[in-house]
Image 1 (cartoon, rainbow, N blue to C red):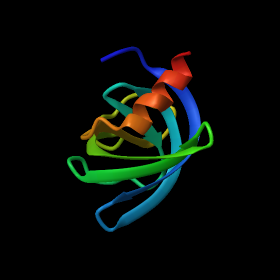
Image 2 (image 1 turned 60 degrees about the horizontal axis):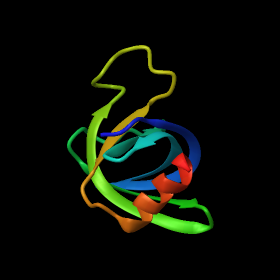
Image 3 (image 1 turned 120 degrees about the vertical axis):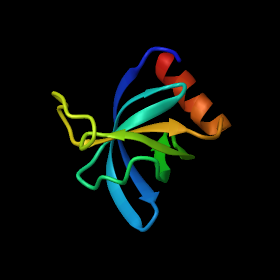
Image 4 (image 1 turned 90 degrees about the horizontal axis):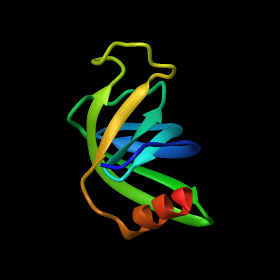
Length: 99
């Protein structure tokens, strides 16, 4: 995995029956952290959607951890997501951030 890039991108997500909104707080090649009050369960499949560079990005992954099950000095409630697919749109998004 590469280095994390801090962001503040509005996003929507679905995890099982839970639909939520939040902000993508940081990203890297393998995953991202979504700051949100609506916490899905660890291990659940999650799909997130956001807009970047005028393009819609839609990626799927697993809820790797949440601020509920990993106590610590987190500034925002939320969850870490590990990507399941290597989406071209996500790779282009990452490239645009690190350019």
